[in-house]
Length: 241
Image 1 (cartoon, rainbow, N blue to C red):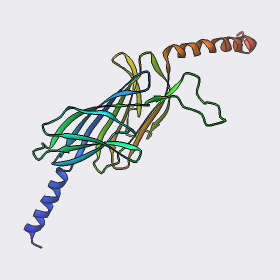
Image 2: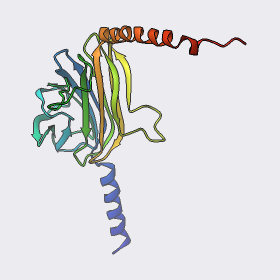
Image 3: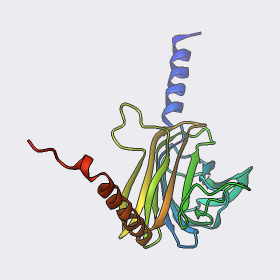
Image 4: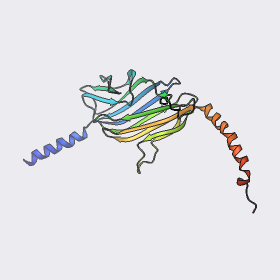
């Protein structure tokens, strides 16, 4: 094999890597309603885009009212489902630019729900609390550079406990997997994970309560604390010097 041929093959291989399709940034935002449904929006930045279909995993079992909010001309979408997971097929035209950004909107149900105990078992959660769970798996060969899910809780609701946040942050990660914050005056949470290859998974599960209920629980525990201090007042009383 001549040096020219080897150089051509090497150039072709390197160029192929440079033009490989990658979802550079994938941001999803859920505005959850009190009935447990949510309005979702996703913004995806694709590098190395080329004519053809790109399948987007979404991390939900069902989607409805899926629409393009913004995208380059002639980009089309088609939602679908494989097994228990929904997806969105994005089709790029022949004249697709190498770096493309598009935004989608959709609706999902059952985002916030009451965990029902198994038959004969008592619920492990206080009355009135609900769970919010999101699990995202990159089911496709296309790598995802940065995945971020932002959830806004219904007005008057707060996160009582984070029950799951996976995978655990690595040694070189300086931010928690799930971070609580306020967005547009509503409490929410943000799940983030970088470098998702095919099969990589990230998830969060939170216990959500009404903000007033959280205060009521604190008041309910106050008499118990005072009773404890009274019963053991001699033990906790400071000894004279």
